[in-house]
Length: 213
Image (tube, rainbow, N blue to C red; front, side, top):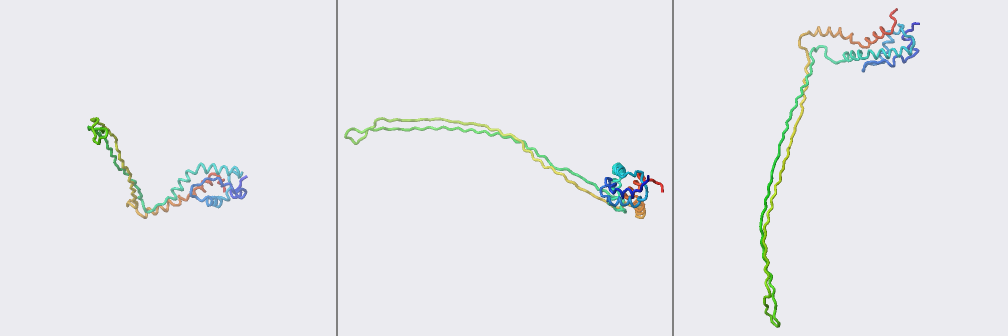
């Protein structure tokens, strides 16, 4: 038994819920267009559950094509420009400075010292206030000392300064190979073909609807 798409949707209004659509497209608008334009046509599959699964699988197989067409249709451009170019120039610059360090330090110290001390001892006689030497002690000494040493220091100092400069150049306009009138005519011819809502509705009709009026 043939049943129209509107009748099935009235019975189960979730048949489009799992349908994949391009990012940015309005799903409600697309569903309304299918119902408005194809509502009285019968579909091959009258079981709502089966039709819902079929719509899901079919849309998943077509989504990459629809998304690409949608991106093209929504791309912003000036229809009177036939030249639009962006160049990015990246320049790396910098330097690396390596300094080798080596130093040797030597130290030598020497000296001598001498000293002498005299120690005198005296005694006093009985009932005498005059002292008399008892003994003399003479102490003397001398010595020398020296000290040497060497220290070495080696190393490397590295100084690096690197950077990147990025320059973006953008040019657009008309290089004169095509007249404005010709470009306007081509734009008017192209725009109807970029109606992706209409494109998907047509594909839906060919895939699901019985083309007998």
